[in-house]
Image (tube, rainbow, N blue to C red; front, top):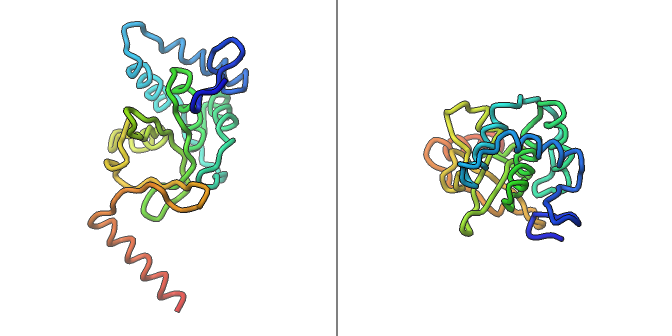
Length: 193
């Protein structure tokens, strides 16, 4: 059975479809469980665990914007090695959120004004999508926070594509960022002339 992005096995319990990944994720979450915490606080404890417990590993692999099907393998890479890139962080975080009952989605897209490939998690609360980006939270070490961040509040734009290939969500560029992007575009145009 399936409800949104959540898949349920014959026993009625959530599964990502891979027994090893399910076992590893359940083991981590069992260690984080505290009956005094709310469901959202339990989600936050899993987010913080991912930020603090794994290391970044630069890899050349990236996925097309809007790509699907990469999540379980990237989660296993992170869970088995303790290291991974943004896609691994997103996949492992997404699986933990889903195990907690959230209809989370691992997103493959781009980040920044001149987008570079990036993966993150999106969860809707009351119909509003929020970013949960454990890799950037880890990388920025408190400079910025990427827990339950609304798209309009991000320090730089997040982009992803629907099947049309068009950007369907991005934030407004402001001040210096917009000027820097315009300068890059102008320089590129001069080189082609």
